[in-house]
Image 1 (cartoon, each protein chain N blue to C red):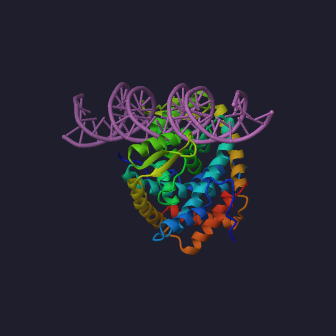
Image 2: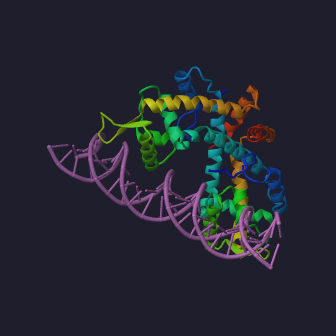
Image 3: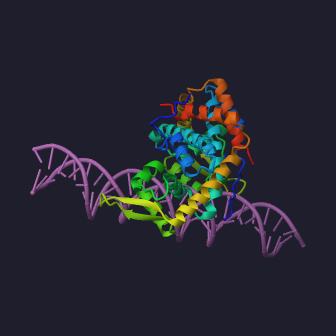
Length: 170
Length: 170
DNA sequence: ATCAAATAGTTTGATATCAAACTATTTGAT
DNA sequence: ATCAAATAGTTTGATATCAAACTATTTGAT
């Protein structure tokens, strides 16, 4: 039950101390990239923790929440196949089978057989799943907004641009 | 201004498309924070992929690599306890037991009993583990440098500063 | 000096992931 | 029309994580 981890510092050691150790041990290397990558990692961890705090009271974890939001943002009544969901959420199809089992058991989604392909399924939100997604996405965006609160609009735009330079690199 | 479409997309959908879906479905919410958080996540995923490409040829995974580097940067012959390692790497101590078993089996680390506390252990790199860490950290930093290649020095500093505003937020 | 509480590390039990094997169905070349 | 190959989703087997229970030892209050 207790989350015995420090929350302010994803990895225990301050980045500067870590770099100093490497400079001492490997003066032939320039450890500067570690600081940038470490900063990405720590921001990611912070955001992940905030996400978890938002969804775990509802008994959801990250992949389950992703399924709900992915379906919700398609619009009322829109469906996706398990493999389509797996691709968007970056899970294996076997993990998706498991996720869907759990969400179905909670009454949040429904497996319908695809009328056009008897191998296939169409996953839809139940009334209850739709309502939960609607409720959670609001607090989710609010939580994200709070975590970004130290950044003004211009800084957010800059941050996005710089991060995309990493993500889009071949 | 926006070069936003790339196929090596961590999650399948371009961020802009995702935001557009939310604006249609939930015009009452401002989904802008999702774009920033999504960008952090995608950069993180990119870096994670690059890391994995560097270490998996050596038969290591992320936590195993972290153990090696954490020990290596302490300096030759310096030791840490399993719980100290677990804290730095943010693994449970039970997961650490497992990691150490595997690394020990590969001959990369050694468990020595703590002379000052018979409950405790001191984990040290073997000669082979030290050499592997030394080899991998070099290619690791090189790989990171390559992934950051699109950013100049000033951009890197800015990126760090902005990310820390997220990570350090209470 | 004693002994309850704290601490270090391991084991156990529940659960998650992935890759590969599998079943059922569809597609496409002939 | 046939049937090998492709595809959709599930099951299986190996392995990882965590929390809680456990064993051995140390700490600290008395």
